[in-house]
Image 1 (cartoon, rainbow, N blue to C red):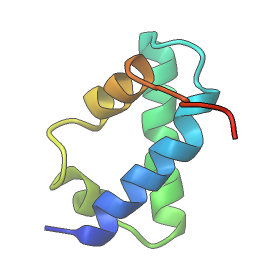
Image 2 (spheres, helix red, strand yellow):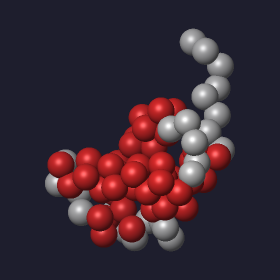
Image 3 (tube, rainbow, N blue to C red):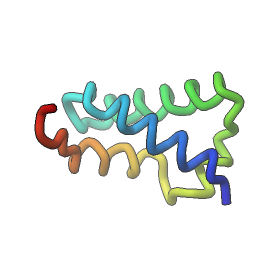
Length: 73
């Protein structure tokens, strides 16, 4: 189990999902590739993230569909 992988995924989703306007196949696929690229840039291997979730695609899709920005500060 990779704490580093799940922590990265949580932070990445928080920083990138608000920018996603749609949950279409192409947008989610592009976000999946961006996540992998950003992780690699930090030295985090995809396997560290994959072992924490069943599917990166579904995880990103769920995050978009269930995004709740909360109350403004």
